[in-house]
Amino acid sequence: MSKNAARLQELIEPVVTALGYELVGVVHVPQGRHSLLRVYIDSASSSVGGITLEDCERVSHQVSGVLDVEDPLTGQYQLEVSSPGLDRPLFSVEHFVRFTGRRAKLRLHTPQNGRRNFTGVLTGVRDGQVVIVDDGVEFALPFESIDKAQLVPEYSSK
Image 1: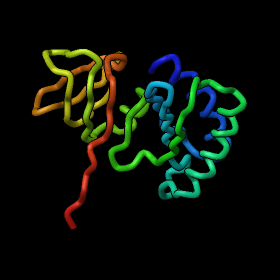
Image 2: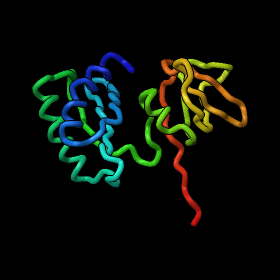
Image 3: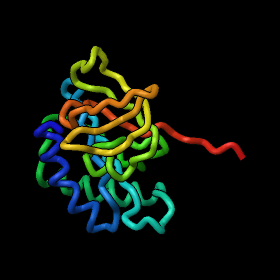
Image 4: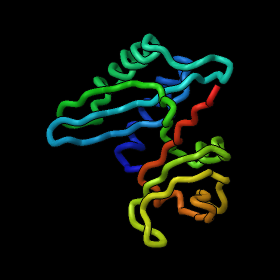
């Protein structure tokens, strides 16, 4: 996570949790003088089903207020608040542990074993490395080397 993303997460997380939600992660995408700030939220309680548009609006309003006061971003930015969705992004080691047994796609900052992209089943985290089985081969990838990771949606055939 970049310094800027970590700072944004520090500012935003208390607001999101105070409203009763879980902060899944923050993505800041600079685009010249403009930028995009995407905030992913989820239900803090596993018994509650999903995030609604009203939840996103509520969080967006509160986060906007904090960002206006703290002013951590230079230039103009667009704030998006969203649920993580079926292709949920994975931001922390805890996410990789939580979703052990699920299929995921990972992209690395720099190639390892001649590859940057991996898709397979998460089998856990060992010694700071995310373990994934891709085409029957186990790879242990350093967490800090992961540029982007997300779950692969699974659809049941009923």
